[in-house]
Picture (cartoon, rainbow, N blue to C red):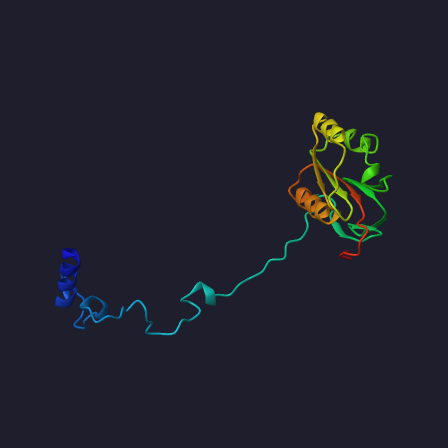
Length: 187
């Protein structure tokens, strides 16, 4: 408190180490109740604040070797990089293949052979099981883990987004997708 009083006396006297502060009293230090920092004496202009500065937007374009992107899906199939795929599909970059399963009940070790026989070995297999996230046989999941493949099981909508995200990070990813049966398509 004594330090504040000493500073107040120096400012009100008008000098501080040979510098003239001016004859005007500073209302915030003189105890008048209002602070000079709460009010502005001028309007903000483009050079005063970042908020008023010009903003530029750069459109990011897809890198040529970033892998396939699932553009949309419907109850009939998928649009992957402009290629329309009818029914369930296996996305194994750089290929898009028909996948011979009708529902999540048809997913077996044999139907997943395509994914674990690939070279280079995939890191993550994203499985889209249709409209809902369905449980798979735990033996299938442990078999894939033994092969060194992480498995993400999701409904198809989230599986498409997860696959796109992982490929954008340049992860070695594959997807097995079953079209959703309901009409929540984004096409």
